[in-house]
Length: 166
Image (cartoon, rainbow, N blue to C red; front, side):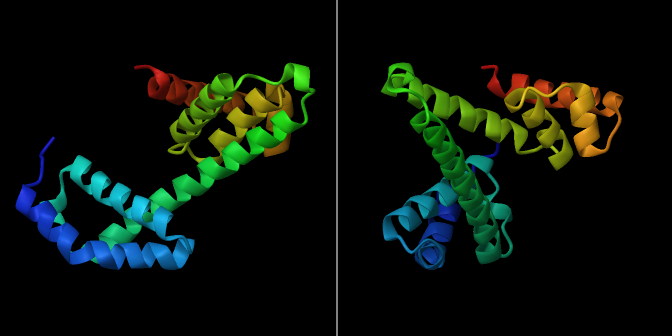
């Protein structure tokens, strides 16, 4: 991976960090979260190694920050849904805090793995895994053939396997 020069990243950061933080602050209405996401945006730029190739820094940074905001929002929805499901369990069935954290982390990894897939493929995977629907039931719901369901599930399973394998 090409690492950008320190001076390129430093210049980008110094010239645009305050703007990006303000841009995020207006969207989040929370200065701590805005600071965290601004830092995450610059970490993303550094990790891709393309800081020296950026022609329009603010639109570029805003695009990365929007993606990070979307990921943050999805993680929050996922965690909220899991915690709501846990609240419906009897206290004796409640997993330990460590188990809850592990499950949330795995759910986030699966969500991230599925992120690059087309919506119908994700939907078929979720219907099969979370709802326990058969190929025929999924095909009926999505108005596709059962062979398409099989292809979708194979693709989604492969995506998850590659994403979750160290």
